[in-house]
Length: 129
Image (cartoon, rainbow, N blue to C red; front, side, top):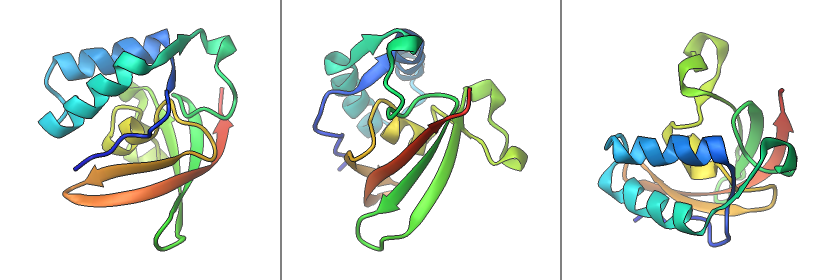
């Protein structure tokens, strides 16, 4: 079972529309779709310049820590058409991107990855652009 971050997420209008379109086109699993629709319903939309620097969004490098193993991973999220494995970039619409987008440093997220639930904490967000 996927569990979304309990708090309200912050999204730019562009990212909000991108996620809404992703769900509408049935690109998310039914389980992800349910969670994403709940998150979108309570999401707060802001302009890019009013989005706090500690919130996960497109063009950001995000460091997360698995709360069970204490292992850290770094993801660089970009627009779906700019994501390239060779550049170590990941689409904001990837499973990890959807799990983290709109959350901020200090948030703990529960998400199901390939039928394995992970709990992770966002420990750093750095904007690239």
